[in-house]
Length: 264
Image (cartoon, rainbow, N blue to C red; front, side, top):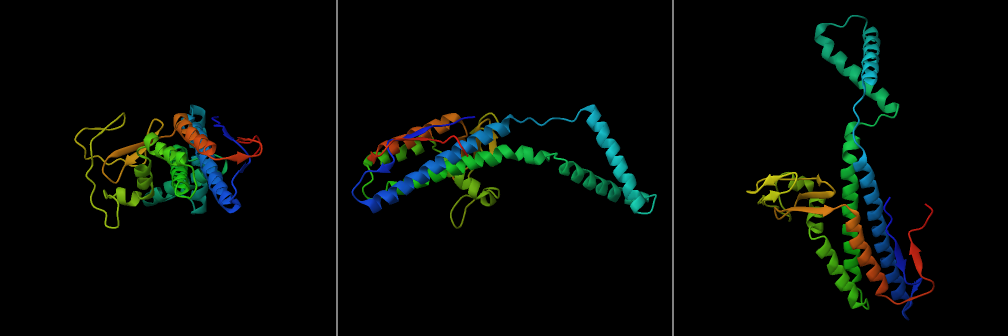
C-alpha cells in the first residue's frame, strides 16, 4: 500500500481576517481531500492490476459441465419432457442464464467486472487529479493568497501536461467515440500520429479511448493528439510536493498536523 504523508505547519491559519482565514482553510481542506482521493484510487488501481484472470482447472470444468446438465434436465422437466430440436437454442440460453446466476450468487465475479476495475480506478485517479487542479486554480484567484501558490499551480501543468485533455475526453466519450472534438458544435477529429507500446500509427488516423498502457491511462484528446496520465506513485509524489508547498506558503498557528490518520 502506498501512503503519501502530508505535514501541515500548524492547526489554523494565522491571519487577522477570520472570515478570510476560514474560507481559505476550507479550500485547503478540499485540496487535501482530493489528494487522498487520488492516493486511495492509486492503491485500488495497483491492486486491481495485480489480479490476473484465472482459468478454471479440469475439476472445475467438469463440475460446471455436470451442473449445466442438471439445470438443463430440470428445465426440460418444467417444459414437459423432451424438447423439440427447434427449441434447443432457447433451452441452451435458459440453461446458461440459470447457471450464471447460480455462480454469481455463490460469489463468482463476472470477467467483465474484473477487467474493468483498473479502468474505473484509473479514471478515479484522473478525476481526483483534475479536481485538485481546479481547487488550486480557484485558490490562486483569492485575494491575499501568497504569490508562491500560483507558481505551484503551474507545476501541475508541467507534471501532467495532458491532464485536462484526457479528462475532457473521459467526460465526453460520446463525442470522441464518434470522432468528434470539443465545443458546442464539435468538428471531426484530425487524428495525429501515435507511437507507443500499444499503437504504432506514424501516419495518424487511429482513435484510442479509455486505454491503459501499463500504468498510463490515455485517450485521444479533442485536438486529435493522444494523451496520457500516469497512475503511479511518481505522479503522487509530484502532487505531494505541490500540496506541501501550498501548505507551507501560508502562516499558521498551533501544533503542526501529520496526515493521513491511522483509523478509518
